[in-house]
Image 1 (spheres, rainbow, N blue to C red):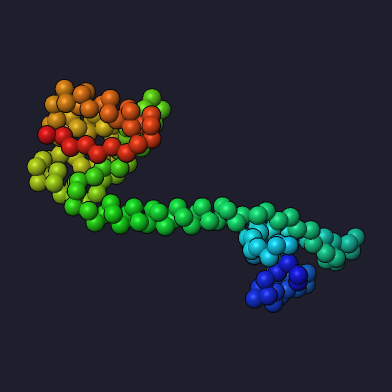
Image 2 (cartoon, rainbow, N blue to C red):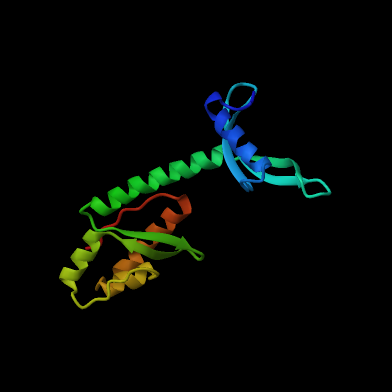
Length: 171
């Protein structure tokens, strides 16, 4: 009980009792613990029941993995993705979300509503499925001259190399 936060003790004790009674199989369980410095850490337990020669439960073996930082990073990523999604879906600027593939190829993942609405007005017969299309292919399909695409390409390669963002407007 010393290493469990007080508010968790009863729940963990109850789970362990059910496990030892064979009422509940809990191969994986997560709970916080307290370190010597009273710091809270989230531990993912991998539990195995131990049996005697008659098949009676005599104990358990547990290995704990500290997943505190992993959960913090996961939560930060979820928060960040949510914020980005709000910005991406509510802005009136046309946006296409790209990913970088080997060979510094820029591949479209998706586009926001403003993009689809504008393209549909300008080019009603155009296939609007942008997913998986390379940047050059997209721009050509929208009628941009190949020369302007080629002039802009070094900007994208520099952004990829330096991990900088790029905002481009083609006229």
